[in-house]
Length: 296
Image (tube, rainbow, N blue to C red; front, side, top):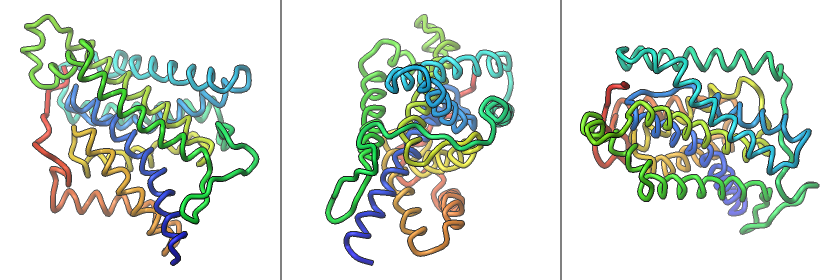
């Protein structure tokens, strides 16, 4: 394997790993606010991408992406209000099962709306097969958009949680739900907002990755598994570590595929997940045990 090939696989792994990291961050946002794992997270990514593709037929691409992110964000809030808020006394396990059911419903709805056809957004820049040379490797300009979107999401969420009153209120609910309520914070709406934030970030990820990977109605479940693996790898609730874990998993997959059949790619995440659960359940980068909060 030449140096240029190593760089090529690393860049490919970092690109895919960035998407895994965004999905994992969505898992962590909901987990920190509710204590549950939202297995519909992958479907939000697909809804965002498919909506942007549909909107792009009638409006310019930037407006299509913006509209898709807004629509998916609202859908995330609707999912929490319709399917989860009524189950306020349910156990965490029951709520997780509900999110699995929601993911199935969303997947079937997408099948009826967009059928089985594979779709893709056009590349944001560099259309016509242009590429960028980096250390002997050639990459699509769209990869830079993926990396930029990941950095923007991480920086934006960090600023939101640390600098805004709403973000601080969400962190307060995560640390101590009862104390937050005594301070006048509406904990239920903070939960709704967590679903909206996670759905919106997933939608943006779906839009920027669509020109590279293409989009189909049933690709949400594999992405959810990868995102969950990354969230566990980084330590549930630790979004900063999820970025490092996502990049790590993406690079591992890229090199596995370079040496073995493509079919083994999907097994990598499962193997990594099992190894982490066996030997270090708190995650490789966990600084402390993630809190487990009752959902409502």
